[in-house]
Length: 295
Ligand SMILES: [Zn+2]
Image 1 (cartoon, rainbow, N blue to C red):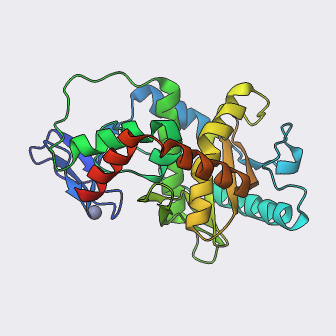
Image 2 (cartoon, rainbow, N blue to C red):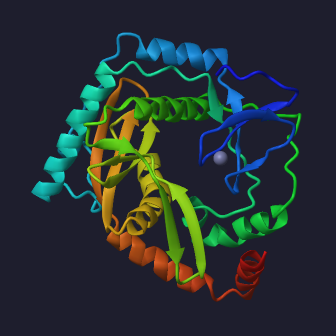
């Protein structure tokens, strides 16, 4: 980035329009709070350069993964074949494009003045997220001078996200792969509208991208991540896009292997809706929702 540093203590980026700048506190831009940018540590940068050096990206068909889940739509020949087509095309893109190695990543900020799609994925945590959003409504975000050190695996996850964002910018116009888009999801059960951004799009279908240490998803941590993290978020993204399924792209941080799995989102959408109805029995939650909607 060639921007001149003009007095601001930290660097920010707008999630909506992509503008970047320096400031002393986190500004709002395009109606939402901008993200603070953190410099990628020398250690992570070196790790990533070594990782990319001579790397050949390799697509692994979801039918060849060692783990099966009832949510994988791999018995559906049409879905499996489109996932493989998406994978082969992404493999070619990754192996031919020269995307820039990132210098910055978006630092996770627990303070938030609005709910996002991700805020609704764990029904038991919605009240806490609303309380937080209501607390920070129209308040300035001072940037704390004391920083917790970010663990290496978390930072590397961010580096991959940034790298794939750079890849997205370089996708040839004729490709069926496109950047992700902003989606709006409405939960009738909670009476709330939330926004989110999908990572990528293939042939009009949203794609959620996640990095993991390796592609052998036989571990319990993978199953937990799929169940508690990926599925609810993907259910909302797919329904916001008028679909009951979408793709999950898993990328190995170990060897450049990746897979693209068509995921059935309907059962999870049904489950999360019933969980939302259940949490609405809490009058405390209802009053936080009222406060949020009226502020
Ligand atoms: Zn903006």
